[in-house]
Length: 306
Image 1 (cartoon, rainbow, N blue to C red):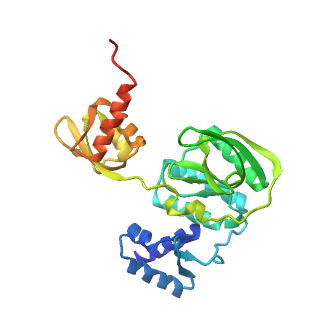
Image 2 (cartoon, rainbow, N blue to C red):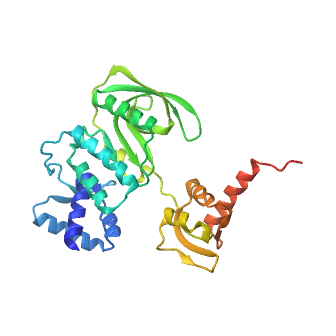
């Protein structure tokens, strides 16, 4: 068990700049002291892992420690990453994740155009693939990009930026770029970018603060709640496809129940609604109240005719 843990720690540090001991402890269900002993073991083996201090500190690997890329170019490795990511979307398991992280670590970081945080459901329709390729070309050629941007409140603004990275995190694709109008690096959600144009204007590469891309508080944490759902036996196959069958319990001859942990956000509500009127949440909870409020807001859009 310790050997596999050491290997996974190393692979993770090869693909991420810093990882907290707390995160590793939670992942492996051990104490932080055990993680620090693992770090000592890695150091004794000649692998330079050390503790980086500061707000965004944590365990980190000496930058000079890289895996040999052999005959594969950076573009080759990025193409492999993109191909494997589609497999990861359909068949998500630890072995594929480990392979993805290993390949990520083989890409020279300062030239990396595409960054992945292996969380959530990675999807890419034709329009998105075309956009990511367009942006990747702009990054490689140091060309400025112009577009209209719709913020979370629906306000539209014109932006002209110096693109540095494309990355995927928690169900969404983003562009990391230097925004002239803000005089700072910003993250732009690709789904909010419209009328994207690669300009003929070139720019000189800036030093990119990687912490802006990978810091843990990039997205605010969403509250999680345990939710108990009772559903008709006719929905069993659909629930198994969604959640698996391990947690499903037979309640009676007609119904099953399952207890799951869900984030308090609209995507969770939509998923429950997809089960139709043969499923319901039981037990009073903040999640159930928020779900009821969501349903009430939906009903208000369809007033009863007089």
